[in-house]
Image (cartoon, rainbow, N blue to C red; front, side):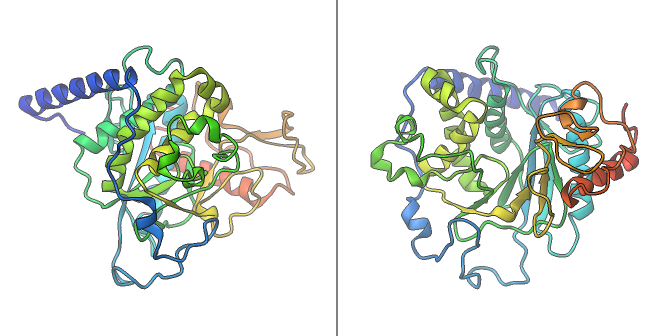
Length: 365
């Protein structure tokens, strides 16, 4: 983004300083539970919903079928080589599908939480957010994500009424419609987010008077499509719950690297924002083998195969694609395709990476 005038710069600097002060105060204060927002029951009681895989059955209410409900895609990222090459590929495919039939994809923002611009500002629409004060993340860099969203939501001019929270290692495989509906967000359910299993711990942040622990959905913050105004309420709570969870040794030990995911799910429930759990939101190779009706490939797991096309997960394969192989340098152009027999999802992933790297200007620089 271009530089603003001097007054605007002073205003933004003051705002960031004020918010940072509030974070520091919040992180050292008891978690506030008297939160605004509609009750969960009021947002969903009149809708017939399959809580696992389907959209609400009544899809005729609200805007006409010809009206688009655009959402803004937001991706949080650091300025590391690892995050940057993933985000460049993600944005390439976003642009490919943004204006295709069936898409309700509006604008795009990389929320860069390094605190300073980088050389890709002209390539990718970017909002520069400040990182947490030194030491506050306790070595868990993901805590910068909710803080970055708080800054973006308070300072940016977001035209769309909905937000898709996405990640650098997402590749869009087809136009995405607005899956949120009737006051509900839409989110991918993760099998390893188990609120019921951790009820005793979660009651520290979601007390019994808020309702059953099943109000906390088995989700993270991504991928999630949610109303902008709802997210403006959720984000500060998500930030404060994340900090409180990380500060508590029992919670930190129990949740580990998914702590921030539990924090978002808890914050959403505290504000009465339920979610349609939509399994077809994304697929995760190598475990998901077909693209089917999915919208996003999430390549978080390594894909290792022998030359017979057999999965050798847990053992480096004769053929492999693992994003962690490229933590200090972007993957080269024209990666070798998998051997015969490797599932469609993995083949598609590598082909899409290759197409992006072949067409993104100055790849590898």
